[in-house]
Length: 216
Image: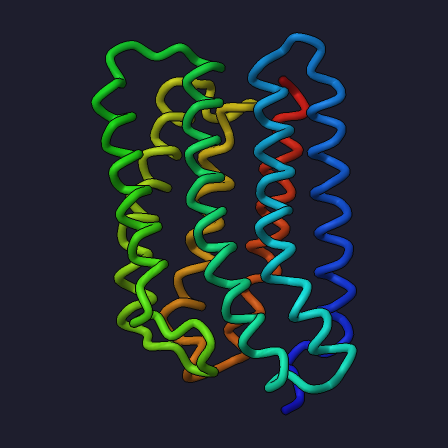
């Protein structure tokens, strides 16, 4: 089966992985006692590490021209990256807490951890059928409900506790944009594979999000 994006997708994925890893290294090496910045570097490398499991099989499929053979590893990579992305948002939450020191948010922290546990548990269930060409949309929606709630909470933290128009407070914009690009893919990519192209701007949004923390 011919891939929708072809070689351009493979090049984009390689550049993304390299750029994200470079940003993570710069954040970590430039921390110099700045714990939020150090945590941001670890978060960036964690994000890229999870996406590696997802994108490497895609790159391999483009090079080999045999997507069907790579489908099981692509599916498992999606599962892994779904879990690591959930943990990525926990990093974002705690970096926001360190950067803004908001008061009386312990209840929100417990809630976001509970949602993360539910999301990860849903991602592990076999009903997701990760390795199939067209996984069930219903389960895609179900596992993304707690993920969406986590995103809303993280966006609210950066919007209300920081300056929403200056770094790092403007992280909320990147979070909202990422979900706007992501949900059409969840809902309709099985019907129209070209909708998967929205993952490209979503990926660029995450790179932008990481660069925001270079200002810390």
